[in-house]
View 1 (cartoon, rainbow, N blue to C red):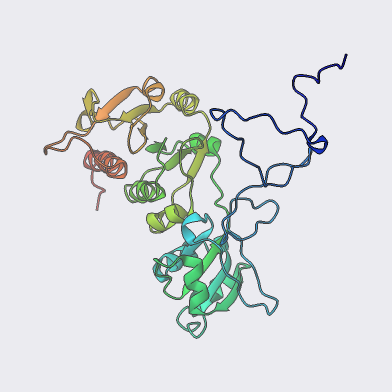
View 2: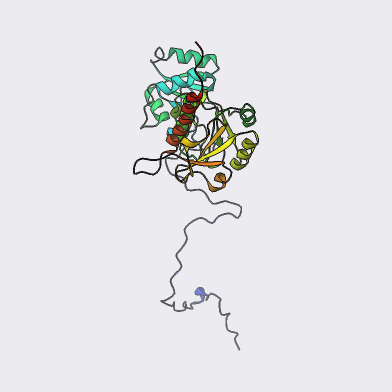
Length: 328
C-alpha cells in the first residue's frame, strides 16, 4: 500500500499533479521583490534626494565644504539649524567690538572689504580667518529669508563663567533661567539683566537653551558684559545660593507677594521658568518667596523676558532711591 504524502508537503508539479484548489477566502501573500537582507546588515535609513552626505562626528549637523580652489563652499542647511553662525552688519559689529576672539571665520562679501575694514582687522588680530565670498554663498549660509548684509561669521563655542566664582563673588541680584527654550527670550533676559545692573545670569543645562548665536544676537552685545554661568540641578543650586546668603524669589503670575513689597536690601536671586508652564513646582518649593507682577489689564501673564526685566528694574529703582546722594 502506497503511503500518502505528508499533509503540508508541496505537490510535485513535474509529475503532472495539479495544485490543490485555493480557498478564495484566504488572501494570497504579496510577493516581496526586495533583495534579501544579510543577517549582519542593518536596515538602511531613508534619505531624501536633496539631503547632503554626512561626515563622521557631524551627524545631524550642517556641513561646511571648501572647494579645491579655496573659495568658500556652501551650507547644505540654512542658518536656522546652525548653532555657530551670526550674520548681519550690526550684530557682527557688536560681537567683534565686545569679543573679537569669539570669531572663528569671517566671511565678507567681495568688494565690501572697505566697509568692514575695522571688523576685518580686529578679527584677524585675534586669529580669525577672513574669506571673501560672493553674495550667493552668503545667502546660502544665512538662509534665503535672512538678510546677511554682506557679512557672516562662524563663532567659537561660548565659554561660560564658573558657577563657583559667581557665587563666591557675591554678585547681586542674580537671575536663574530654567526652562526657557527660545534663544531670543534668553538673549532678551540677558540684555535686560545687564541693563538693570544685575550681577550675573545662571542658565540651567537641562530643558533650557544655551548661549547660541541667536541668543547673542538678541542680547545686543550684553552677553559680553554680563557673567553667564550654567548649573545642572537647579534646586540644589538654589540651596547653595541660600547657604551663601541669597534670598530666592520665583516669579509667577499666581505669586503670594507683589514684587513691590519685596525687601530689596537683601541679596536676591530671581528665578524665571519656561515660556509656557512657568517655574517648575520642584523649583518653587525651594524659593523663599513666590512673587507676582500686579496686572492692570485683561491679560494675566507677561512674556518671560518682560517679567524678568520688570522685576530687575524694580530692584534697581528701589535701591537707587534708598541710596543717599553723593556729597558734592
